[in-house]
Image 1 (cartoon, rainbow, N blue to C red):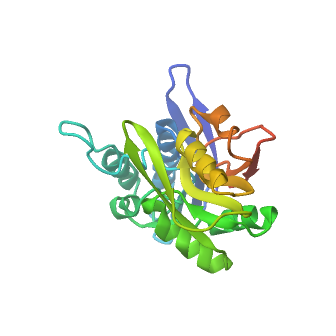
Image 2 (cartoon, rainbow, N blue to C red):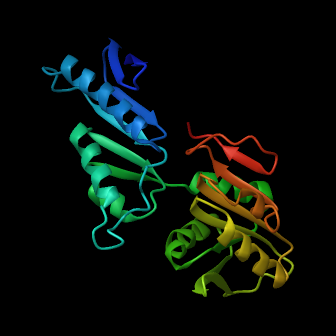
Length: 252
């Protein structure tokens, strides 16, 4: 299927179907504009396929906006992921694939959704470094990192963090002396926590510390990472990064 997207001067988006057929949209999905773009395409496609019962529409979201807002954090606040999920559900796609969602809540809220594993991207970083020890940065990441370690035949060192007077205190639960380590996580908004974790790993004798994140936002703290991280591996699910400190694995 081919289509055109036009954006008017006031920001309005409109879509036009040029050649009909099954629809398979793949977008970053990290902005409300991305979601509206998908919605306009799907609405135009629905109109063209109203009598075609065999037509299939699928959507791939490489970086779901609002995925960390997976609950109502404080009284009186909006449940943002629920709002976003309701909008996506209204499009009525037959299947929605989401790359490395932050939590299972996304899959529970979005109809016909499935997770795209980040295994292949972690494996590329793992092989490029040369079989490092995998490090889970906190309790929330342990389960998925443990599954990847088993698939790769890699050693895994869990870590945990608690905040004392606003600053993270890191505990490492394994031996890292003389080893290269790869921290694995889903998303980096900033780099402060990874900086402290890498510093602690090196204080316990780690030779080098690398970072893998699927969704590399780096809205702040990017330069801080360079103080203790040796190199960053990530996908371009959120944005393209042109920096020799970063190896990006293309997903879109």
